Length: 310
Image (cartoon, rainbow, N blue to C red; front, side):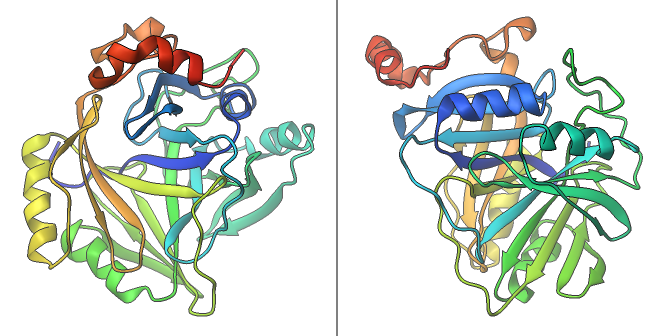
């Protein structure tokens, strides 16, 4: 892999009820819980990681289920829609499956690709998209969701902004994306460094209200790099552009940098290494509560404080 941004690494969102969140993503949508840990800054809150079998970057949707946080508001200054790639011909399956659970589904098309839009139990806006680009990623399968319908991973993420110009410059001048297409007030940017999870859409809406982060909204999006050397090279690029960025942070399963782009969206850059099997065998991923090392000494207290998942 090249020393470039390799599309999306993960997306992190906020939920309310932990068990409801876990059940919806693993049972209804059929993705794997690849890591069950806690929020680094709030160890009384779970941090769930959902993805494919091994938690491949580009498939990982993570949640902070803060119980009682209340409902957020999608709006400008945030990532508002998460797009998953699904196989051609699978949208009818998903429409029927979701509607059977009283989830409203809207059919549509963006840039010539058919999709359905709906929200998760907290109001997070999701889109399942039949990509025009062949997607050969190996999905996680369940008894009810097989290879011809299973989610492949991210297709795109949509940012909603009052003004798009400065954010677009961050994408093109710092992160190496190229402008690809435009339809109305939606612009699409793509990186050629990888063929999947490689699209960022921007909706420009000067009249829209600012978003409010709580349940049903995205907290941040993370871009993928292969290693720490590449990560730190991007830190210098961000600093050289006059933006503030954090020092390198060890998130146990990857190393990260965070910065807020001019439109208000929190961006992260995250490494492939060391991955989710660093502290669990592949077959056991997501089975055990894994804690950051600073919290192991109070494990029993944390386990008592966390919401029940059974």
